[in-house]
Image (tube, rainbow, N blue to C red; front, side):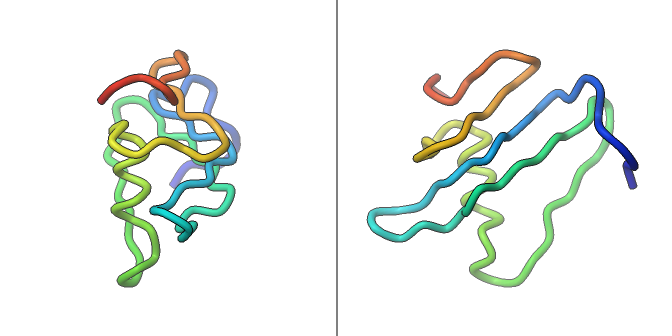
Length: 79
């Protein structure tokens, strides 16, 4: 468990909204993933786990918000 802000995250998501068609799945998600750690995403069916991963991988674009990889904004970059 990480306590406090992560100084230099490898992945940062800021206030991301994303979904499919008219359906919004992620509502303002913010997340910092630290370097050199194993992070898991758990939750019930339909909670947005796959949508979050698609957002991180770049196969789904955020409707608003931003995704950073190693400090660079990759929100509009191809996978």
